[in-house]
Length: 306
Image (tube, rainbow, N blue to C red; front, side, top):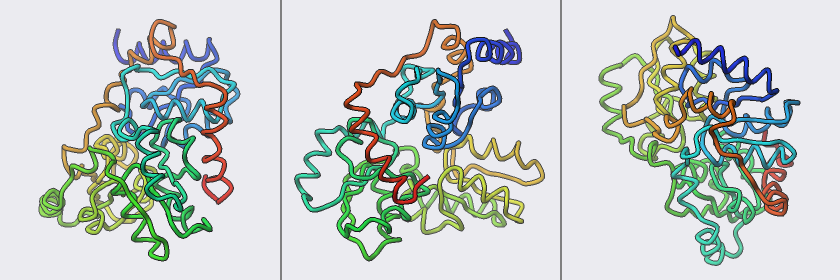
C-alpha cells in the first residue's frame, strides 16, 4: 500500500467505526493529515471530550491518552502505539513525588500535564506550558512544589519571583540536551532568524530566545510574525509543519538533537492497525483513580487555565 492508500483506508475506517483520531503536533505529517484533531496534549483531550464520537485514538504518548481518558471516562480510548511513552512522565513516580511532598509539606503541588494519572492524584493543580505562569500567579499559596520538569519550573520561577518554587530533578531529555553552543551555531548560520524556544529547554537557551512558549505558542507566533526566518527550538517536526503552513517563510530546527523518538514511534500503519482492531492499547483506569486525578485539572480550569 502507498501512503495515500493507507490514509484513504484510515479515513474510511474512522468514519465507518465512528472513531475520533487525535494527533499531537509532534507526529509525522502523514498522520496529522488524517487526524480529526491536532495540537498540544491538553488541547487534544479537551477536543476529544467535546467530540461526540464514543471512541478516541491518541497518536502521541501514553500520558496524553491517559489525559483523554481522565476528561472523557465514558469513552473508549486507545494509544495507537503501545510503546510510545514519555521519559519525563515516566521519570516521576507517585512514590518519588510523595517523598518530595514530605520534604516540602507546606508547598502546594503543581504538576505539569506531562505526568501520569497516579502523579496527578497527589497534585493540587495541573498546568500546561502555556498556562503555568498564569495559574501559579493566581494560586493563593506562596510556596510551590513544581514537578517534574525543572527547566520549565525554573522558567516559571523567574516569572513569579514573589513565590517560592521548589524543583526536583526531572524533565524532557530532548529539550534539555540543547545547549548554548547549539544556539550560537544556529544564530551564526541564520543571523536574520528569530529564535523561538520551548521553556523545557535549559535556562541558557531560554534566556537567548526572542520568544518562549508552548508548542502551539511557537507555531502561532511564527505564523503571525512579519519576520521571514525562524529558528525553532522544540521538537524537530514543528519546523517541518511550519514549512508547509507558511511556505513563504523559512524555518530551521535549532538542532538535530530535538527529535523525540517516542513521538516518532507512532507510524501511519500503527493507526491503521488500531482502527482495524488488531493494534494499539486500550487505556484502562480505575474509576477512583480518574476521580482523584481529574481534580487537579479541574482546579487548573477554575484558576483560568484552558
